[in-house]
Image 1 (cartoon, rainbow, N blue to C red):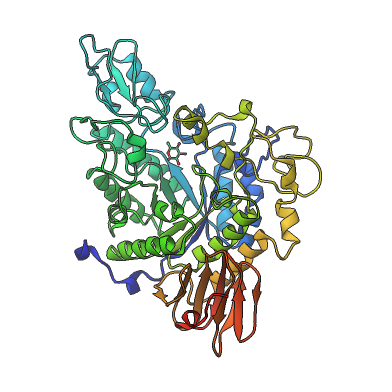
Image 2 (cartoon, protein in one colour):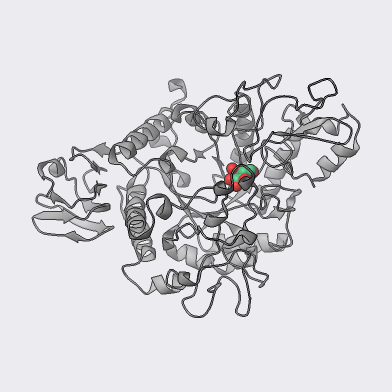
Length: 547
Ligand code: GLC
């Protein structure tokens, strides 16, 4: 990989290298028309909030025509907007408004599979076996005497076999829900179609794509068995014949050429699950995509040594290919991190700390809508609302609890400003207690999570040492982390459940703290807290003992 390394100085000014990108789950961000479901006009009306928060770009989850079997990740028409989310004109207006506010727009593209309601799949079902229509998907004969067994042993990410049988006896592959048939990327027509889809949205002005299941698309030749059950547990940790195959990189290279043919540094971001940080780095080689989500960071337990290991490995492997690291704490597929970190007061304390840690690291950071409000996972949604197809795998694996609509206003009843006044219900109910977590309530509280994010994002934007670059680890006691970023910035994290003392030394000035910090010659840092300092503290933290 070293032969592909590029000079960091040559790319240091590129916007995406240290962009803070805010993920909007369109269904749950803001409802403009009062049908209880978030939509593009809703997002558009809240763009000033996002600009004020201080992010650089907004990633919108799929808003294309879809029967919503996987809430939009089952696309029936890649070049249109689902009526529930608005119209193409709304998308255009949203992109224009965002640009006027200095925000870039990244949209999702879903190339591994279409919806089963896509015109291509209808034609495939109507077509004969071995027809060109079927060849756009992965149809195979079954095993067993009458072909009554699936063609191989692959399991769907959402549970059950990855194959469904159609009327004439053939089977089709779906690595996700049966309503999401996998495309056949050995077929040139599929390549041509997606090239065109990318161009369609680039022409409309989007600044990049988040590529769904970017490690999918190409499958091992012959579709070999894995040989044993438990495939979902292997994703991201072991080699599997349906993900992270060599051929996907050719696709990303072709897309990079398309992106580069447009003005303004349009980017590709891989949602890629690869067995190691090194395999992941291959998606962001200089002629492939620009960024890949770093799920290894998201999965790190609340432990200083674990964080340090994952940060080091991420920086090292990204640097090998000249790419920026990315940092993600939550998204629409995982339990919100306030809850993952223990929930309640402790979860919130840790989430505040994690925010300052993440935003101090070199590279680009992702914020999932509502994390700036400290929203927890909603664990007690009534059964009748739970509709995530992933629950097939195991009822507890449902992702509905991280997709509850955002609370915007402090007065009145749920859904707390998510929808226009008078809207009775949102598609998932907003808990009554979220009025206190609303944007309005937190905006007037200087100690709120929202105020912390706003201040940290402002500082990150203005401080020359933050964003792209490198870090130097400093010695610090067990359970803590300390690093400097040049001479003018240090970050100290206390991930223990005890207070610690930091000897700041002359010139050490506390810039920000996620928790209470008592200043003086010796600064005392609360349990589960992260602090930002002006100046390089060197190894000062190591001289302080636990108290
Ligand atoms: C990605 C999306 C997830 C979706 C899946 C299938 O992992 O983030 O929400 O269910 O792809 O498209």
